[in-house]
Image 1 (cartoon, rainbow, N blue to C red):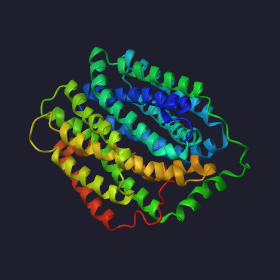
Image 2: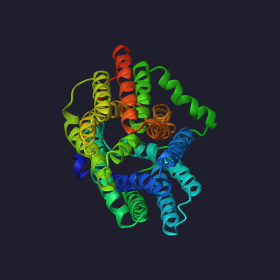
Image 3: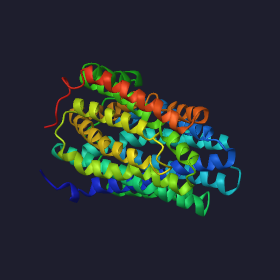
Image 4: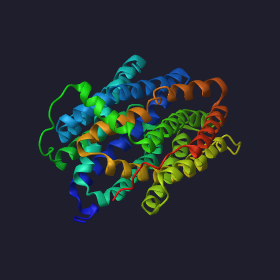
Length: 398
């Protein structure tokens, strides 16, 4: 088995850097909608800003995957996260000066999205390099725990810091990316052994698609993730709107969103023990997500969405860990960066429109109606997934 995961310094440095930067991102994820709502009285532009960031991420995803497979992934992590620190610092300056310029937010969000497109595949290839195959499921469980600890602490902390000063969450996020860049530097991810022959980008882009074409189960799983990501992202702003509609203060908005973190941490702890196949997990998670999203509309007070958010978040890490470990184990090393980009490109292809859709529907019909629509759509997707071939060609990791 080699060195236990807890003593794997390279992985733990990568994990710490990602944990800090993800916490920082949660600060601004809640600060931007609160700021835009305070300035304009609507969440629509907050949805547009989030949509622009997602669009930039999706459009940059494929070329980023190619370049990560060509370049030094450690240096890619350091450069991209340092650039993100500068971008978020510029957002802080936008707020400090009182400009609150939406066009500037849009531009900076686009640059942040492009940097994230590089960070994702660079981290995926680095983890595959420093973690033995037998420890991948445990590593991905720790990754999920990191994600949901950020959800647990970030929203409430972001709302609290926003109350202290509108620019404070942005300053915190900028510092978090500097910490992540330093951790990536000290992790000293080794360069690839040998250089892959340089070929035209068109050929580099064609290879991962050709590989995926022969993985029918994985293709279908990615299609289901496309719908799940769309509905999940679209439902976030309506949750915030619902809390505000029911008289909740800014701090309560943050507290409600910590339900994602509470459930996610529990789910991450349980994930390594789950033995269900990805196919069965997908149907189970979609069922829970659809039911709980609709349940948020129940008239139990501004605090109520915390409960269904928590229940949904318990199920989600189990699916992410299972699929992530299988994916990492089955993808060839020289395709890892590009395949991570391909799968993120496809599964997130509709996320740029998700926050805009969520904000539009919430503004038009209210948070409760929007959540009912998205929950019902998830249950329809569940019925489709139940009859789809999601597992016959997806091998289990050794």
